Length: 376
Ligand SMILES: Nc1nc2c(c(=O)[nH]1)N[C@H]1C(S)=C(S)[C@@H](COP(=O)(O)O)O[C@H]1N2
Ligand SMILES: [Mo]
Image (cartoon, rainbow, N blue to C red):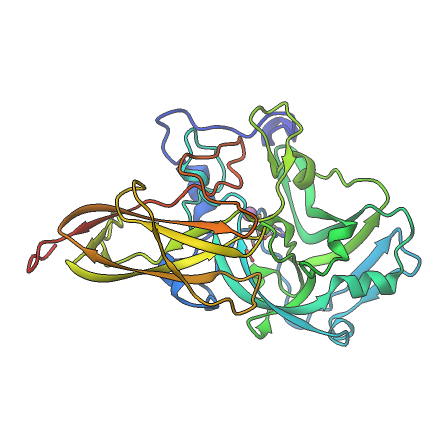
């Protein structure tokens, strides 16, 4: 099987210099959709507009099918909980901006061949569930525990390794309160949709998407570091395939613009009429609260302070920003750049690694402003 379906010791492929998006990437792109960027206008992303990423197949779980979550491994009191039992625990609702670690990958040179996101792998939802720390406290974790492994019900093969989708968190993150990790059973006040993990998923506010295990069926406490595929092979920052690499964890700051004006159907190039334009968008960071957004209308040569919406205490959700601009006829390149309270900001030159992860290169939005009275 490894012979036909890849080899875990072989690195993920990089596209040749002029190689276009291939059929394999197209197949991924048609299954895994992004946020239509005009939906950045909503505080909470409406159902169906939130991005989706699923490595294998979406498990078929009929509404009335029984579901058991087990909490086991290095614990004194293993738990087995159905949905009604989970709902009986204290419940928490948190608004969370979720972003795929591979967002921006298809803009990289050279391009890592995988899900070819431009910049739209993001969305914001209100997740309701049980704090994971309550379940772990009840299960009574043994001394010497190091990781908590989360197993989804989906199954597949990746670079020759057959697996259930599994990711782990260090114990201090799993039982922490900043962020508070949730075992979520509701999204925007309704049961989880199939593509977002029905009936249960993990939510790790501030962390990139890969940590938020969907179709969650098992929580396992370990006394040795977890070395599964998604932890040790995928989701590592490497320049060379032989490196062990650094793990991908929290979301780096990013700002995006609501696309101004109107689009050309094929190129999606933006067209504007001259005069005052309210530029607006969203900014987020999983590392520290966003403290600043700057805007450039001259392809990054000069930067101006944008107005950030007041802090509403929703630490893990994107923040709105805006900037008043007067469009003049001709071509312009618009950009926004977020900075967080820990001093992280967005680079103007692409950060590159073999997986195309944590790439928060400043967005460039070319626009064509028409002459007064002209139509496109
Ligand atoms: N079980 C399972 N959980 C998963 C995945 C998966 O393939 N299987 N994909 C992860 C990745 S890479 C991302 S970016 C997020 C996407 O969550 P969403 O589809 O709800 O937006 O789910 C994560 N959780
Ligand atoms: Mo992802």
